[in-house]
Image (cartoon, rainbow, N blue to C red; front, side, top):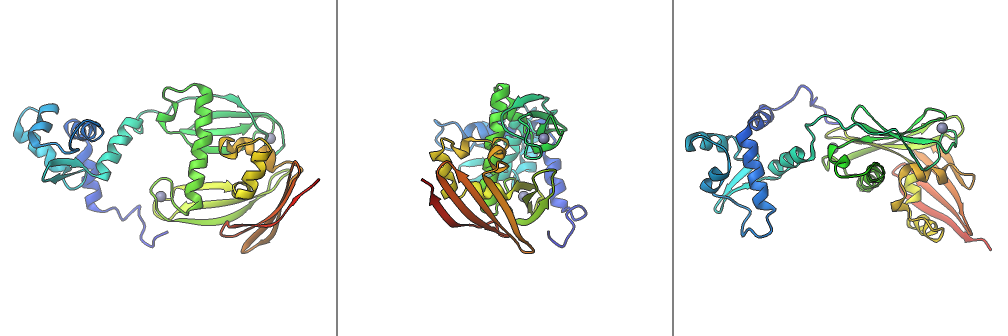
Amino acid sequence: MDSEDPATDIDESVIKSIEALANQQRLEILVALAERKYDGKAETSAMSFTQLYDVVSCQSTSQFSYHLKQLVDRFIIETEDGYQLTYAGDKVRRALFSGLYEPSHVFGPVAVEGACPNCGARALNADSAEGRFTVECRKCVTPIVSDLFPQSIAQERSTQEIVDSFGYGIWAKYLFVRGGVCPECYGLLETTIQQLEREEHSMGVSINECRRCWFTVSLPIDVVVAFHPVVIEAFWQHGVSLLDTPLWELFEYTTAENWNTTVRAEEPFAASVEIILDDTEMRLAVDHQLSVTVLQKTELR
Ligand SMILES: [Zn+2]
Ligand SMILES: [Zn+2]
């Protein structure tokens, strides 16, 4: 984390930017520019003063000009062709459309496939609580998966489709983590590994925290091993496409008898993992930087 404390070190320009958004006409300007930008038939993504004035509800040109000025250089830019959205302007508009500022969606509980990594019971429920999506074991009441619940994930989807979407969303975040990239702001992630002691199955968990925005993704190191191409291939031969298998269903494999993870060292972290899948026996090593190497692969027959 940076040495300055972001909580007390908020720049005046940031406050001005947020203030600039709290107005109907200014949000309408962002939406109008987005409509133009994503209109496949429009020649340019820019709009002139007059074009914008015609579509935004404003009483006078002087009032409109004032609102426009509040957005320039932050959320829109003025070019030779006219006004255009900046990355920040489009991001605010996307947040608006995604329902970020609307009340949380209520969902579940609903039974989902997979086994509890703590007690092994096939008794998992997906639910929503405090704006988060959760998967919990009904038997030992252990939370297994927790993720942010964006409003738009629930729109135009059935309950099962919502659950499936979280499965893909988690893997998308995992891909960011693989590259050391924050899925929220693209900042740099810092990875630490902790050993999580559970009743029957202790597991190594990689905690990946963004140095810039503090967004954190925690995932079992078994996930990193599962996504090594050699393991992906063995799963594919076994009839399972890993990217289409949500995290909570993957636990059924990582906690099974034929998947053994042994922590070799804690500081720095090192573990070895033995997996037998049908006729394939694999031995892999994971280090503190989450790099995975194949130590051995044997076809049993
Ligand atoms: Zn359980
Ligand atoms: Zn971040």
